[in-house]
Length: 245
Ligand code: HEC
Ligand code: HEC
Image (cartoon, helix red, strand yellow):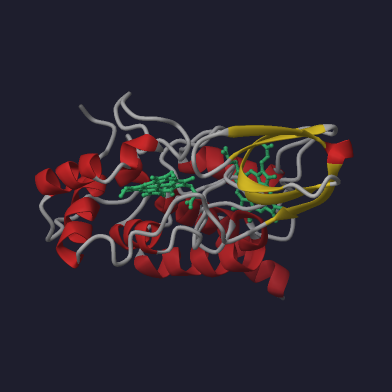
């Protein structure tokens, strides 16, 4: 009986767009995908899906194909347990993660830009080719993240660390302790960058303890360092960065 219902719904095809559809897609996502791609899609064991352009294609069809068939030779499994309609619902939800609508925010983006420049954000972030690359590039951040996320990123930087950014603490056999962001790691060595921007390289053989600290970040929290008005302006500025000149 159930199989018949599923088959019938399966013929509904693409274009799941109502809020109710998105809600169903979200529930399916949380059940099947969030263990690897994170509750909010920002990644974990699997890549960040909350971005406008995905490696394997950003159309709903391309995403549905990846979900249905998986990616051979990787940890991305095919969702054989989902019906065609369910696959399309999840695909529509994933697509929505990467598309943050432009909204009018109360802050002043021009003033936010000056706060950005005056607060040293450019020491770790690139915007339109300027700045340094210790943190993620922010040129298109307004397309990828909503205002709530942006606030969280500045107030509690460890709360949602994007894919690829891992904070580690290393204790060497000789008793030296260094922590920072992992830049590179292979079977024999690891390179990290500490909060002051300095690089350290270790052979694994000289490491006694290597701790991966989820929820830690080399980005300082700006809670209390910036006023509520400055934060609001910064959020408006970041939201305005949409990769358009
Ligand atoms: C066991 C972990 C795991 C689960 C469960 C999982 N994924 Fe993935 N997913 C991955 C990994 C790992 C990759 C990256 C594969 C690669 O190396 O390209 C990936 C890749 C993807 C991509 C392509 C991303 C890109 O940048 O092109 C999409 C889309 C995706 N997953 C969606 C989903 C959805 C939707 C679900 C739930 C139905 C899901 N995944 C379940 C691990 C997982
Ligand atoms: C010492 C380096 C450093 C400084 C200074 C810094 N950041 Fe960050 N930032 C990072 C790192 C590393 C990450 C990624 C890890 C994380 O999310 O905590 C990050 C993440 C972010 C994110 C989330 C990006 C994403 O793709 O999810 C935003 C937004 C952000 N920073 C904005 C700012 C703003 C605005 C300032 C200045 C007020 C600032 N940062 C100052 C290092 C820094």
